[in-house]
Figure 1 (cartoon, rainbow, N blue to C red):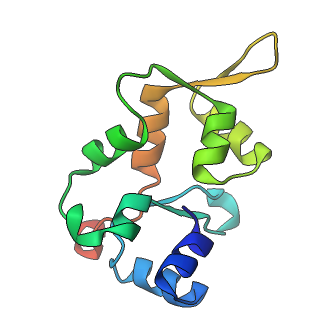
Figure 2: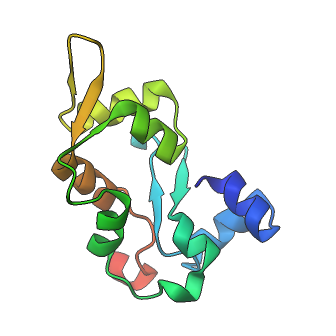
Length: 132
């Protein structure tokens, strides 16, 4: 879910949503933006947005396992684009970073392990004390 989804569900402004992220009020948030341009493309774990108390304290690896089921070895680029509401160029960039392969039919397939590691690296929900 992107910032607009959180805005609609919670009745907040985009600035307020981003402020809550910076304050650590949303814990399972991932920044899928390009690091070099400094623009954040925040994506939220929908279950936390809908039911915050129901998932409080869940370890990040468990959340990632719910987003990217361990039973799946690979994910298609179109799945990633739909799940994370990102553009095709962003999917391609994620695919390159996560050792994705393009088949002869021009279908991008991304292995689960590098994709899970990507989400771990892009997690912005860690408490501010842990960043010091």
